[in-house]
Image (tube, rainbow, N blue to C red; front, side):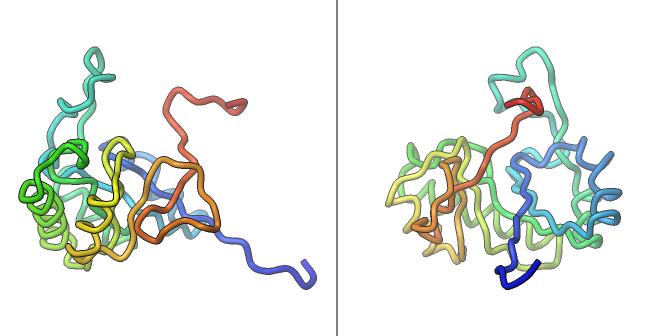
Length: 168
């Protein structure tokens, strides 16, 4: 490793599913990961009724105590909205409430500051980005391919889904 710059990656999980409790603590210990989990706070400890792709397979979201335990391990938490609605469809007042309520609930549970948001379904607009900045978020994450020109409020990510394989 001569003369090159340090390469870093960020690991994040949208939706905050309970199955993260099975594997994440061991991975944190083994690889010194500091992941971020984006949680739709209205579903803490509840099933994923919002997700049309899980009609035939219900999954539980992390419960409050599980979020606290993961936060103690160093996991960072971010907003994924309160009710996991496409933020682009909300009125200005509902958009503000969706972002602020999610942030406050997560800060109350973790005792830490919540400064990142992942836009539900990856949907955003300039109005949503501005509202996120006004709500105090330092950065926002989309489902777009990342580039060096990304806006701090619209950072791209490489998405990996449960149905992906090593080849995809």
